Image 1: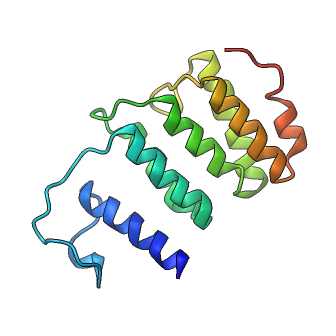
Image 2: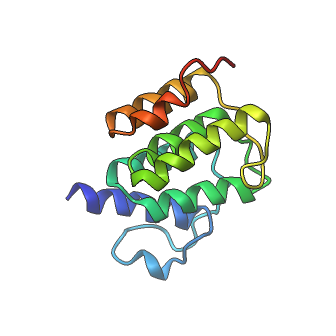
Length: 147
């Protein structure tokens, strides 16, 4: 039941942001002519948190790329925080990517399209999620970083 609800929440978000058609919603009760919106950073962070808890790797990547390619979105560190937390749940490749994104942000590099500066919370949460998922060596790469 919980996973189905999480997938419904992601479908509604995709529909409202213009990424999914009305017909693809299936049994979700939404108005057919709902206005499209540009999600803010809080909405994106929530979508990424849903992906993390549901272990929806592809969907998390889709939300991140959407945030990166949409110039109308003001990216804030909370979006990066939610994404690197989710990546820690997606195996060693995800753990590598989490560390890479934090380090790219600290250097001010594009990730892959726009730069988001990590704050203290981003770094500490990434470190904590990496440790709790057994990625000690990855977490150690973030120790002692001051922003």
